[in-house]
Amino acid sequence: MEEKIRQLTQACSEEISAAGSENALYAVRVKYLGKNGLISDLMKGMKDLTPQQRPVMGKLVNDARSALETEFTEKGNQLHEAELAQKLAAEKIDITINKGRSVGKLHPLNAVRKRLVDFFVSMGFEVMDGPEVETDYYNFEALNVPKDHPARDMQDTFFLGGNLLLRSQTSASQVRYMEDHKPPLKMISPGRVFRNDDDATHSPVFHQLEGLVVDKGITMCDLKGILDSFAKHFFGSDTKVRFRPSYFPFTEPSVEVDVSCSMCHGKGCKICKGTGWIEILGAGIVNRKVLKICGIDPDEYTGFAFGFGIDRIANIIHSIPHIKLLYENDIRFLEQF
Ligand SMILES: [Zn+2]
Image (cartoon, rainbow, N blue to C red; front, side, top):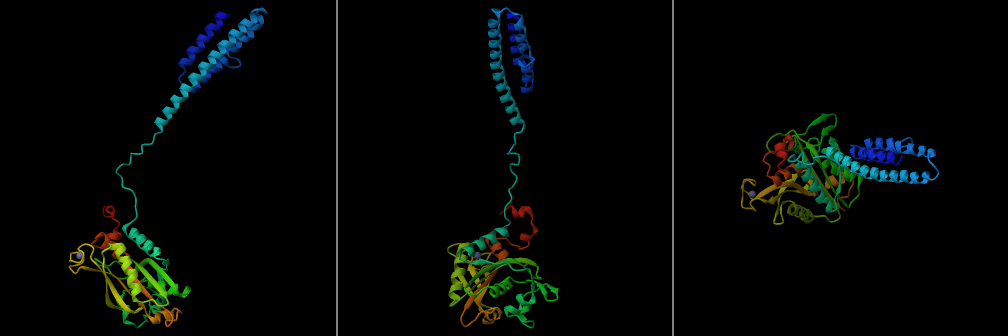
């Protein structure tokens, strides 16, 4: 019987070494150490032994069993490590596989719009979104442009029939805001506007940002202060701002605002067409009639408004020669930003 234990132990050891997987190892374990395994069977033969032999043989069997247990554990750990390593290798993700592919980012128009909004929000302006389909009232009449007013010719509007149109300016939002809020007011309204206009510097759809401040004692100085900070923030700290008299029905007095050319610093170049100045926006003191229409007493309050094309600012910042490039979504163009 001693010999049989030795043979079984050796056979089991060899099978343990040969096991190529955790499953195979488990099968070996069942074969030898299982409830009806070969080693367990030996115990059943104990009853045929003499009382003196029993404890000796019992010890031999138990020693063999515990030695084999140790071998099973060691081999089991080895196989587990190996299988894990193999699995990791097989499921490895090659994170360099898309190397060289460009990453998504904001469209230059959206990036500039975000910078503009961030700037004005940091100055305490509230952001308002207005409807793109407007009524004639909000787009024109409330802004001091009655039906027979020649200023309607300044904007080629898309009329939708009835009283509706595609808004030709974000100024419409001003009126809606003044109807719902009492002064002091400080708001901007960025958004899409539409005009029947189509050339190198005009697109039928473009983006405007409208700003409005109404409070007691607001003057042209406040307007210039805000626009000066704005120009320095966007075009460089040495940028100068120039006001030229102009006309808009909803502001009186009205100004066109130019900034010194950041390319040539006023010397004159292709970007500024040799003048040293770039026109960026229209502004002025809110017309008394507009305040009155919106229910604000023009004897108590004054305000200023300004509006500019976000597309135009993007074009100036990035020296983009043609507004259409912003709308064609040509990847080769967009990748440059
Ligand atoms: Zn220039």
